[in-house]
Amino acid sequence: MDQLRAMEMFVEVARLRSFAAAARRLGVTRAMVSKQIMQLEAKLDARLLHRSTREVSLTDAGQAYLAPCLATVEQAREAARAISPAGAELAGALRIQAPSGFGVAWLADAVARFSLRHPLLTPSLFVDDALLDPIRHGFDLTIRVGGIPDSSGLAMRRLAPCRGVLCASPAYLARWGAPHTPEELLGHQCLHFSHLTDGTSWHFTRGAERRTVRVNAGLTANSGLVLQQAAERGLGIVYNTTFLAWQKLIDGALVPVLPDWELPLNDLSALYPASRQLSPKVRALVDFLVEEYRVAPWDLALAQAGILL
Image (tube, rainbow, N blue to C red; front, side, top):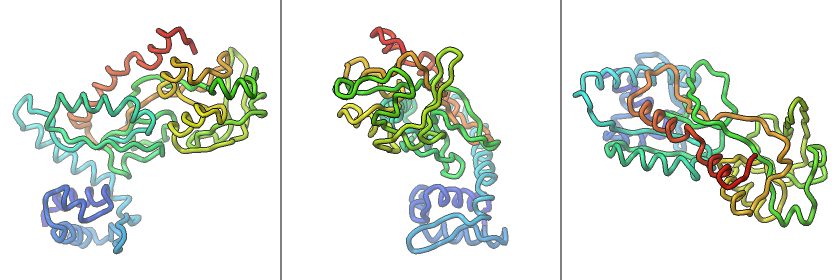
């Protein structure tokens, strides 16, 4: 048994939750993947995977083994890259995860332009507003807004500030009036993002003042895009982000609510497993994104339109 090759196969099965998909990704047969992992389990004297006709999942031992296994596989690849010709082109798979709103509005275009510079790369962009663990789910890079987990297994690099903004449609405000204090939100229909870490408690600051209001959620969704669309239709006041709302605010489809009160400032950050040496392709993409968002283009567009939040 080639143990390093077996470890690589285990990593792919763990990422894709499928022997067949891992085999296609690695260019080998499903039987070869199954045989190598069975031999690896025998060598370790531990069962790494639960197998059924419907799915493959990690056992507790497999979960514990995955992070160091990932690090070993990546170190082996890095060693091979070290003796590659100087200036060798970036190549291979690049798995990226991002919130759906940011991924659709901004990251998809950035990844496409980055890929044009490096045609041997084969990026996969997975957009989901869930707070997915990049180690467990096998991502090379995860973009996240706030909610950064307290994990020694993750390294983080800040990309840009991310500002929250309450907004609603002119039609909603004409019908129900605009709140003047955070507490007046209790009399309004609020559109709530389910992944906010404090639940329906919305926090506000104005100078030295601090207010917290537990709003009544008329609609809850796990997608910022869904909530913004509902707000445009006049359903209520949405807790939004400037990177998602900027164009609607400029067009007037949405207007700021409680503009003299600030919502918590979060960072847009790049996360990657700290246990592995950062590969050249991931480093290059992170450097590209840092430069891309050095001056947040969504906030610049709002300022140029005279909308100061």
